[in-house]
Amino acid sequence: MELSLLSLLLLTFPIGAGLIWLMPRAELARAVALATTLTGLGISLLALAAFDPADPGFQLIERMAWIPTLRVNYLVGVDGISVLFLPFTALLFVGVVVASWNSVRQLRQLYYSLILLQAAATLGIFCALDVVLFFLFWELSLVPFYFLVSLWGIGPNRRYAATKYTLVMLAGGVPLLFGFLTLIFGQAALTGVAAFDLPTLLAGQLPHDTQRLVFVLLLLGFAVKVPVFPLHSWLPLLAMEGPVAVVALLTGLKLGAYGLIRFAVPLAPVAAQELHWLLTGLGVIGVLYGALLAMAQTNLRAMLAYASLSHVGLVLLGIAAFSLQGLQGAVLQLLNFTVVAGGLFLLAGFLQHRIGSTDVVSLGGAARSMPLLASFFLLFGLAGMGVPGTNGFPAELLIFIAALQTHTGAGLAALFGMVLTAGYFLVIYRRAFLGPIDNPAVASAADLRPRELALVVVLAGLVLAIGFFPALVLDLIRPAAGLWLARLG
Image (cartoon, rainbow, N blue to C red; front, side):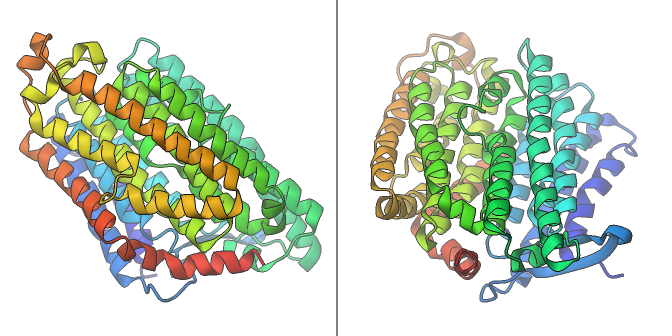
């Protein structure tokens, strides 16, 4: 059978991981990893070019029997909501490889092969249209992270952090699995046939009580990975203990929020709208709680972790609005995380490698010795604040408008949270990058190298391009978002 672009994309990374072990020298592992991630980026761009923006349904579909007796299929495809996540995710993995270029010296073959396997599992989550296949990719994504954090983490409690993250995610997988099983058995009771593929499940209509149970279970399963308060404690711990480049994947890829959009809301639309207050409440708490804790941090990595918790609360508000503007803003905000939050953590990783710390007291005056790094850090921070001209502005504007129209109090609270965002970022930026240099390591630190500069320029280009021309993304999302809303009735 001829492979589709999506299958080719998913196979590229395991093949690259295998090639790493065939290299005669371990030093070649990073070159193979970079070539593989760039190839994956190219294939994802081809998939985007082959995508018809006017078609609201799933495209680039490939179906193959996987477990025939259960009617479980290998089924992949994308729509306007998911297609842009492919190149954005591939680009972030390119960034992780570049950020790890000089910082990983031990067990390079294992490290880069795990990075590539993580890329395959993550992209599989965005492509899977069968709930069993989705759950497989979801659980497989835990394995590389465990080893990446426990073996290459930079904190003394890295093994504890890796174990806690894995156990928390496995616990979150239990309600997720039960939610999918409840959904499938509920559909089978109505139609007499158990269906596992998403298009068939979306076409059905579960009874109200079953929908409520399915939505609560899926919400709980995805909320662990969003993360939402009080299920968030693994994120700041990993930010301080894990490899900074790897943590960029956790802050840049909000897979839990994507799961809510892809599965939880459209598969249980009546229950989702009935429990809109729950989504709204979790969103508001996340925005304010994350912003307040970010203000209290004295380490860039901890600040960025809590900032991502605050910003993902906006995504929940956008989803809970159940409007075109809200959904467009939520999807755009998730894409922005890949560029902005991922980019900020990659830059923090560059600082960690040069200075040996990201504590504010160790970084004073960093802009004097590293003006390029400081300038790009400021640009990405302004994008996180939603300054006009950056990609954060159209996303947050859409979410605020949608929230104010449907949940006025929550929208006002979110606006206050964004004021706090400006406060904590500008204060910590001034202390870390401006003023006199007190640390000799900062005075002698090198600015961005050509390889790092090329990566950051691409990310900055996306920040500005989407900021000035948001229609490029929003017009692609609109047809699928309209169909998503139509399923809500």
